[in-house]
Length: 116
Length: 112
Image 1 (cartoon, each protein chain N blue to C red):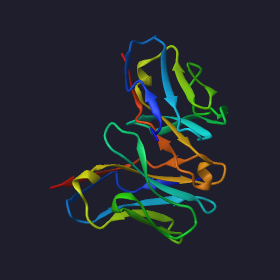
Image 2: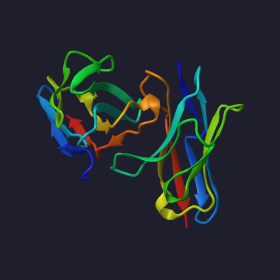
Image 3: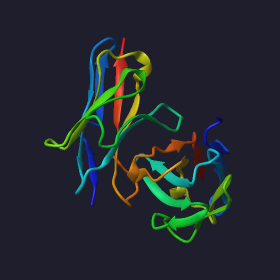
């Protein structure tokens, strides 16, 4: 199993540009999560999907952020326009069941975003 | 509401000595508890999990954790630290329909 695959690993962009982060979850996993990690705030849940449907996007910072999951094997997180405060490591994770029942998350290696 | 507190932001040990990373949780009902490890420039990896079965849980790489309901604790231990254990460790709680709540992490430093 290849695990959760994220691309790109690193992204450097200028303020105002559009950024798209990509994720391929583990095959057969019904849940997909997007997290953001910073030194100041730690790990923050941005949004999660169940069977490709967004369930909770209350963690999405503002309208500049959007996420889609067009099919079971692909999701994107888009920031438009990007700002320096968006600089962080963005993680995608998937799970085969609900975490409240004990199903663990499987994380990708993250995308390190730097907005100058 | 649920929360998790990792009592130490940094723990330093010498190679070959025991490791203790402390975690206290708050949850109205029986939670699921996890420990994850994050090595530099990597995603988080599951070390072990507790889901109301045996209170002593064994994980990968020789780590284990004991669920103590009376103390609302889920401390992570390892008898003998290895240099490769140097990483950041996260205690995580989940219950029912709530998503995971992550602790702020404990950085484990291992010296030769």
